[in-house]
Length: 85
Image (tube, rainbow, N blue to C red):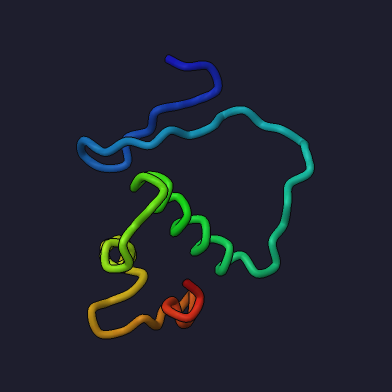
């Protein structure tokens, strides 16, 4: 047990940590959050890959997340992913 977190089983042998601590601090609200979310995903992948990443490895990462497909860089939520990246 860890203070403030709960381990929740979402599927068989799959778990997530849920923060149980409430706060009333002001939170940043982003009006164009889709671009920032995509940027965050790309930057985290690059960082976890060792601060450098080949382009094809990044595209494969985004394919594995079903953000892009082999045929298209268009995404319903993000728009033109290739242009944004």
